[in-house]
Length: 237
Ligand SMILES: [Mg+2]
Image 1 (cartoon, rainbow, N blue to C red):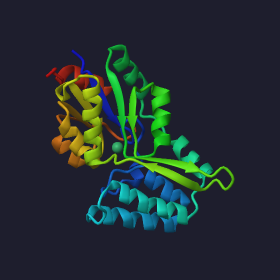
Image 2: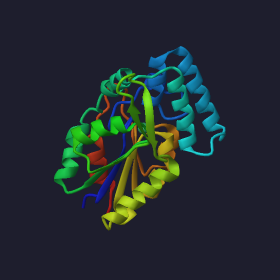
Image 3: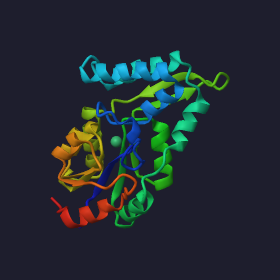
Image 4: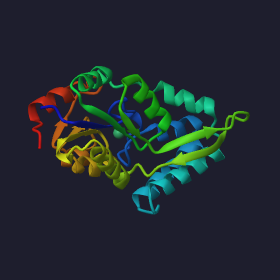
C-alpha cells in the first residue's frame, strides 16, 4: 500500500540545493541567495542573523524573518531581483515525474517550506501539489518595486508539525500513514512526527533521525529514488 499523504520539503528536496552556500549553520535556501545577490554587506548582515538564530537569540522563526526582512528593506530589495532569484531555482531532476506517480496512486501531496511563498507557488503550480505551507510572502509596491508589506507564517519546527497534523486530520489519515521527505536540519522535528521519513541527500542532523537516507553523488541527484525507497521500506501503520 502506498502512503496516504507525502509531505515534501521544498528547497534541496523538490528544488535543487545551492551547495555552494551550505555552511552547515542552517539549511541553505533562497534567503541566502537573495542576500548574496543584493550585495556583500547584505549577505554579511544576513549571516549575522543566522548566527543569532542558532544562539537562540530570536523568540521564534517569525522574529528571525522580520529581522532579515528589515535587512532586505535596508538594502532596497526590489521585485525584479526577487523574481529573478525565485525563477532561476531549478527543479530537482525527476521531481515532476515522481509527484505524478504519487498522484496517479492516489497519494495526497503537500509542500512544507520555511521559505518564500513565491517559490512554493512555482512548485505547486508546475507539479500540481495538493497543499502547501510556506513562511514568507512579499507584497511589492507597484510603483517603487520595493517591499510594501509581508505575510509571515511560523513554518519552522513547531509550525511544520502543527501543519502536518492539521492536514492529516483534515483527510482523516493517521500520522503513521504519512511520509516526509526533506534535506535540512530544520526538518528534524517534522520528520519525527510522521510514520516514515526520508533524508534526501540531507544534512547530518536529519540523517540521524530519518527512517531512511538516500545519498546520491553531487550532480547525480534523482528524486525518483524516493519511490523505490517507499516501495521497499514503507509499511502502512
Ligand atoms: Mg530543504
